[in-house]
Amino acid sequence: MAVDLLLGLQWGDEGKGKIVDVLTKDYNIIARFQGGPNAGHTLEFDGIKHVLHTIPSGIFHKDALNIVGNGVVIDPVIFKRELDQLEKFNLDIKNILYISRKAHLILPTHRLLDAASEASKGKAKIGSTLKGIGPTYMDKTGRNGIRVGDLELDNWKDKYRALANKHVAMIDFYAAEIEYDLDELETEFFASLKVLKSLTFIDSEEFIYQAQKDGKTILAEGAQGSLLDIDFGTYPFVTSSNTTAAGACTGLGVAPNQIGEVYGIFKAYTTRVGSGPFPTELFDEDGETMGRVGNEFGATTGRPRRCGWLDLVALKYAVQINGVTQLMMMKGDVLSGFKKLKICTAYKYKGETITHLPYNIEEHNVSPIYTEIGGWQEDLTKMTDASQLPKGLNDYVDFLEKELEVPIKIVSVGPDRTQTIHR
Ligand code: GDP
Ligand code: IMO
Ligand code: MG
Image 1 (cartoon, rainbow, N blue to C red):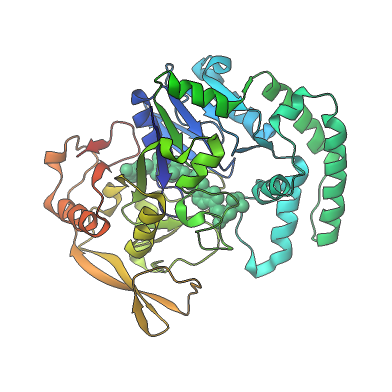
Image 2 (cartoon, protein in one colour):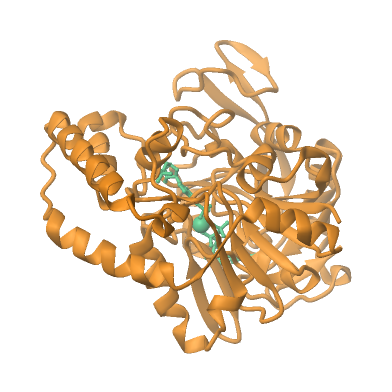
C-alpha cells in the first residue's frame, strides 16, 4: 500500500489537525514526519477542543496506530504535558502511540539557545515559537544530537552532559539577557524522560515498511506549511525542517515511489505567525474581520496571526513543489459576509508583473495584483452537503480549481469534525 501525505500549503495552521482527524477512519496508521512542539494541531469533536503538538492527530481513534517518525524532534517535557492532557480520554497509549528510536530529543538547553539566538537578532528575529526547534535540528545535522534510542544505551548521560555544557558556553557567547535555572529545567527534563521511556520505541522505517507489505493504510501528517520549509520557504523566516512532500520520505523512511495521494490543505485566505514576508497581508478592517471571525491566534504560542487575502502565486508554488493530487479548502465559513473577495494572481516585483515567487521577497519590492470575485453572504457552518453551498462559494472554488489544476475535494465550514463537506 502506498503512503498518503497530508501537507499544509501556506505558512502553517491551515487546519491539518482537523482534517487528519476526519481522515483517520480510512487509515490504520497516522505518522508525523517532521517538526516538533512548534506545531499546534487543533481538533474539535463532541464539544471538546483539543490541541496536539507532537502527538499525531489520529490519537482519538482507538483503531488507529500513531507513529512519531524519525524526522520529528521531541521535547520530553512538552510530550509529557500532552500525555497528561490525554489522560481523561482513557487511551491505551502504549499500544496506540509508537516512537521512532531515530527521532531527536530537544534538550532544555536547546530551548535556551533558541531564546538567546532570537534575542541576539533584535528586529531581524525569526519569530520562533522558542521551542528549541532550530538548535535541535542544528545538532542533528551537526551530528551531535541525542536520539530517543540513545535512552536505551548506558553512556547517553555522558553525551548529554557534554552537549549541555557546550550549549551553556554558546548561550554565554550570545551575551543575551537570558535568565535560567538549569538545575530546575533538568529536574523537569529527567522526570519527563521517565514517562517517554515508558512508551513503545520502534525502528519506524522498518515498521512502516512491514506495515505497507501487510497492506496497512498509512497517512503521513505534516506540520508547519510549505512556505515554512527550510529549503523552499521564505528563508530565513522558516522553520528548520523540510515541511514539503520530500520530508515525508526522509522523515519516515518511505521511498519516493511509495507515495500515493498528496492532500494539500489551505485556508480560503492566508495567515502567518511570526516574522517574514507576506505579500497579501492586510492591515485594514478586512484583515481584522478575518482574524476575529477566524479566531486567528496561534495554537502553540497564542500570538495573533497576521491575516490577508489568498495568495494564489504562493499556493501554486506549493502545489508544484509537493505534487499535490487533491486539495482541501479550510475556513470557507470565515469569508461569509464579504461583498467582494480578492485573490492575488500575480505580483508586481521591481516594476514587472511576475507569477512566481521571487528569490528575494521584501515588503518594498513585492506588491500583490488582485483579481476580484463576488463573495457570499450565507452562513455555511450548518451546511453538510455540497449541494447546499452557495453560488458565490462555488464560483470561488471553481476559479481556484481552474488556476491550480487540482480538484478541491473538501470544503471545511467550521472547526468541528462534522463541519466538513466532501465534493
Ligand atoms: P494546524 O496547525 O494546521 O492543525 O491548524 P491549527 O489548529 O493551528 O489552526 C487551525 C484553526 O482553525 C483551529 O483553531 C481549528 O479549530 C480551526 N478550524 C479548522 N477548520 C476550520 C474551518 O473550516 N472553519 C473555522 N472557522 N475554523 C476552522
Ligand atoms: P503548525 O504545524 C504556524 C513559525 C513560527 C516562526 C517560524 C520558525 O501548527 O502549522 P520555529 O519555532 O519552527 O523555529 O519557528 O515558523 N511556525 C509556525 N507557524 N504553524 C506552525 O505549525 C508553526 N511552526 C513554526 O511562528 O515564524
Ligand atoms: Mg497550528
